[in-house]
Length: 80
Image (cartoon, rainbow, N blue to C red; front, side, top):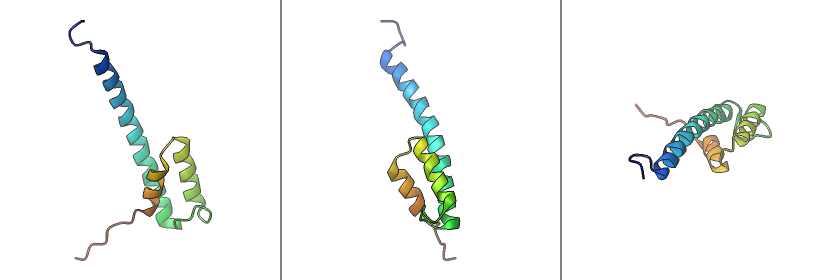
């Protein structure tokens, strides 16, 4: 075995890079979904922008739980 050339480490590095890319994409898509829901309402049947954002998220294999969480997210109201 050569020093520093563990197969497990190679797999781990590839997976971490892949997960970082997916996370970045999912973050952008959830932001798009949140903004569409905020401006036009949370019902995709009545909100074409939200419908489009959800379709894009599903095309990127974003989990349904993440999509519904982005729709339900509400901005915090501060009482200052």
